[in-house]
Length: 277
Image (tube, rainbow, N blue to C red; front, top):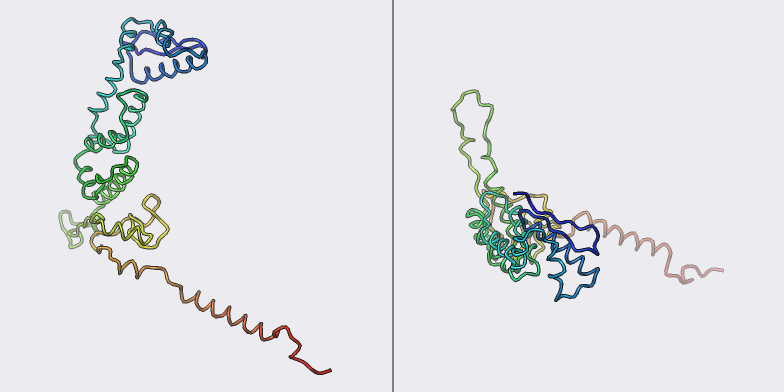
């Protein structure tokens, strides 16, 4: 069965919905065309359905539209959607786009419902990573999404990095070396105390350095090595606080000396330096 389509010659004419299979996208396009018509012709709300219903060429479409069955189908699609093996950001964006079709309907997912739907249906590995990082403690959808992305980046780095020191040009097949026995140690997630320290001392949640200009989204330093990583402390933050360099200190002293010498040459602006006629 072919898909229905929306036809509207000018915005002052009611749209026509041809016979065919209805999809949420087609219904959304029809709704926008109807709203455009209502606005330009100033159609009263109580007669709006009557004005556009004749443009539905299939009787079944008329019944389908007027009983609002399409909204129930879209909501069912949202409720049954799961991430599976798809990239999280791609799946999350699709869910939010589908939800936009329900704008103005009672079936529309609020931000809280959308956040809970994403958490409940993300794949198990990602959900475990987010739980370790404390992502699920965040109630705000936007902040939750940002923290989930950070957890994904950290997990991907851990899982995809190759063992250190592997020799690919070993002439003796099957012969191992000490280097190949080295394995990558996973970077532990930030603790609540470490996050507080990084916030307090202008730190980056990705490279975990204090007093730096970068942040997770634009950090070029990358994540620390898990094998040598040490839990962040207040003492470490204090030691990393920027101090005036030796060069800048010398420059300041030289500048002050120059000012003093110049002042001595010019005098204090009185005539006491020379009283002779």
